[in-house]
Length: 478
Image (tube, rainbow, N blue to C red):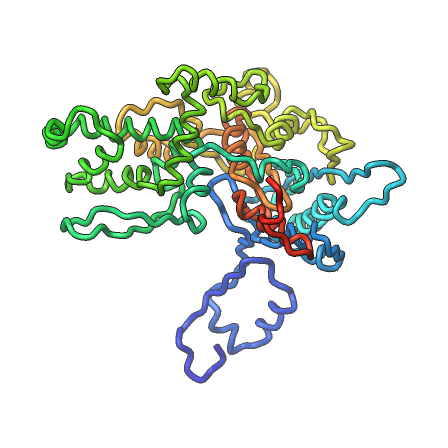
């Protein structure tokens, strides 16, 4: 910037994290630099958003550095300090000041010494609290009183969630498809009837069909996609004529090819065909096995049907929960913890608070407080949109997903104070799904944070890196 002929007249500098005072002072002392700066701001964006209710701090090696065989307090403290700084920027950008709760260290017996691993949530909570108190003093418009709750856990709280098979559409896509983050590459018919074109898409909140189906069971998602394609074809005369030529019974794939031949609906079909793309033979077999386990009555052989009914999992249902699919009865531990936190039933000796909540702190919505005659509870500083997954299922055609997206962007209402849950060592898509589900149930926005978001293969790879001894799956007797 201090060269003879600057390339630009003004420079606008934005920092993703807090800037050291020494650096700001150095910039101020250089008149040639200062005169060319149009803006200099701290953005507090040291995190990556997964979706509207999830973020990661991108500490991909946290599991290895904090829980590995080669325990190093120096390396571990550096990892936790960086993680704490990045977590704090989430609250700075959202203008939220949380009560910080954490899982207390536990020893197997009084004679056992508490290790560094036992203190990970405690140390991280202290680091986050230290950053937040600085924000409270130095950051303009930062809340001076608590506006939300933060619960800090580590991966040991639930060792099953990262490796169990999750049956939702979101998790199955990441399990079965070769995806890079949320990016998926698939083939769409060429507009010139030539070679199919490769198209990159992001499975994110802007995709209305993704919003509608991402947390649905894979069997339910398949049925609903077939319904959408069928209803779309039934409303188009050209497709009806073509269908009469092909035959009365059409598969989802047949319907996809038929509708793709209608160029006037290319935009709508791109949205639908993305979600009914073909998969490999191996993955088809896995999906068939899922379908067989869910619908044994669909198979003609009575013996096979009865045998599969007996083989159904015997996992107990949660009281008051209605489960449509037999294979959807696994609940991550954080679901129970968040519900207890919301009800003020989380034991303080097991989950202490850095800044103990006052008796007047409530998480209920303002509307509920008014109905019960109580004083309205404090709220976060912005309105929350009604998420698409909070809507009742009433899709009746291929256009319903778009209406859901429009509804989501236009419908606002007040919700109770946010609850943030941060898991050190990696979170799962089942836990992210639970946060969306509980937001609807508890009328509070539940936000999941973690050092990373892992699918089962990624988690297993990270487990192997925790030991100095090289491991191979061939060494295991299964």
